[in-house]
Length: 95
Image (cartoon, rainbow, N blue to C red; front, side, top):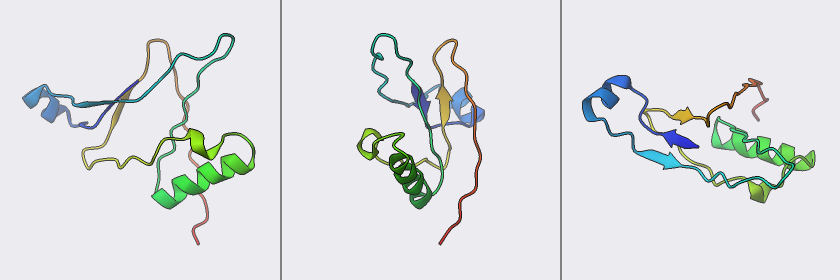
């Protein structure tokens, strides 16, 4: 999966440079499907969600990547052929 850090089409037309950030997507084990979760929010909100998924025994904290700062230009994610996505928007209380 590629994650582009330049989203503005005018920028892409002018430079043609996409500067992709390649995210590791190793091949899943036989008989298993690889799902990728993307949690976007404040650093505190992302960490809280990762902690909650750990408490629910859904995902170990150490299996998540380090936090990656999204640049002002935004991000553009290009999926693999045939992939789909669903977005869940949910508010969480802030202390």
